[in-house]
Image (cartoon, rainbow, N blue to C red; front, top):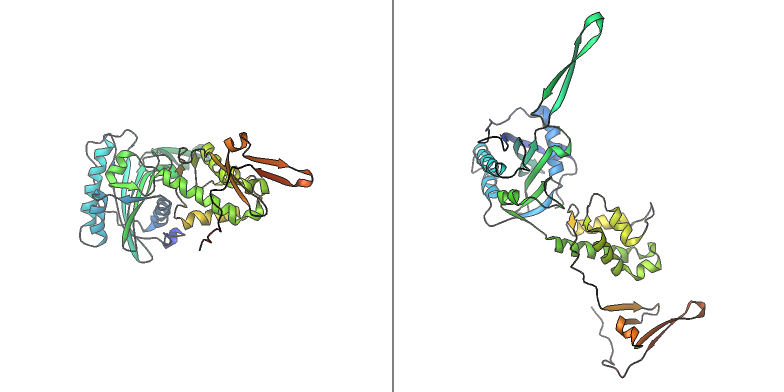
Length: 350
């Protein structure tokens, strides 16, 4: 999704409304459309940009969110009425999920590059203490404190859930965040509310990250010691099993586990970012599927001369293949066999 805005300055908010929801309410508290957001556009554009870094989800055939907001984007249904419908539906899950706290459910219609998109952001109420000063005795100022509960704050933890209905190339996708979820997943109730599923399973993401790491290691092979180049696949799979999870905002633990310590001027971090972007998972947290890569019974060694030997540990134990270190750094490979299964030319791969 190459058209995502690089700066909140490119986000143009057209309409905005919010309703109050929470487990202590019997019904959602429906409010009028908020049309005086001009002074606060920068604040809310920043929140939208943060939500645009969410994980990609796809709509199910039946989706209440898509059915409510897509007609609004096309000018076929009223924005306020559809926001009220969605707020009532969200309030219903708030009564059932104790992880949802009191706050505001905000709906936006906004533009990026003249294309209209829709969003909902769930903000938690945060108690803050506001202070002001007034003249006191002997000419000294005195502080006056006031507690405020219903607030919008910049702290990223205040945005509990978000879903961006992003339209691109005549396709609608969802970009979602959920503080109550893990590794990019959203809670079951929020997923049901949206009528969506994650675009990639964690097994698929594990395979994609695995392939990206191998590709980067081969592209940057001149930066890697020979012992790491020689065991690139096994090191990659060991790292995925040991680390368990991956946060794209902090790739260093994964890169160090696979490639070893990385120099400050190394090309590897940037190449890895490009590899993830090419595969369209640059913002996807992953919970690695440790069962995806079972330990292979086969091993492989390839000599400097291009001779490849594929063998098993049992082959070594029975003396079928033997590896020896010779003086001067030379190696000797001995294969004991009863005959050849294949004795032919190797067809070139085009």
